[in-house]
Length: 228
Image (cartoon, rainbow, N blue to C red; front, side, top):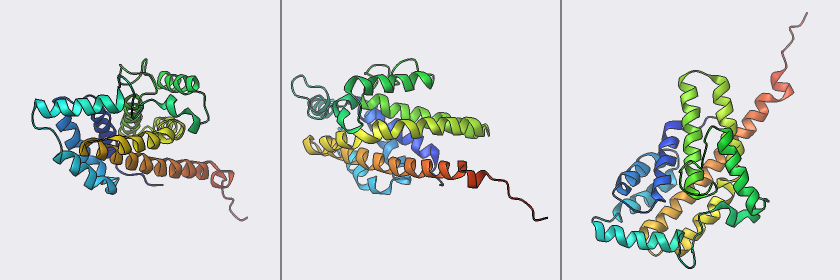
């Protein structure tokens, strides 16, 4: 299965991760990058990324209003409207809460990441898992540039093993809560963009796994004999 431009996906995950950070001066650049790269492989997000751009705050007062919305959705201090932790949605990936966290942490270590990729949140936080997808795709692209087929397969296998049981499983539920509870157009459309990107990634992951199975099947690996 031919996958979309991997550079566009690398840049998409990098920008999407930063859109979930508390709003700061870097937010505009992150949204601009998201609007540039995401629609090239997920066309359905085009309108929502443009809406995010139109609703970016132009001054500190506007950023503060977004910070308040960000806190209500993802931080609390009382009810968290859209919990950004995979362990909250553990029932959908058939793992216990602590197993979800431990499994994510172990996959980071196996990939050479000593702590959660975003360096501040628990291993199952949405920014940690998004940034891990960025890291895996970046490493896969680097291996492609070196013409290292074995490394390409290794990084691709890590990605296609990780995504379906972590971000690909609970991420759409999280995005749905962002869509439902966001009061600002910016965060409502961030939820829509996130949901569409994760759906597209799941389609690609499913296709890549099926393609890999076909390539490794006994029939595909059999050496044809020449009639004597």
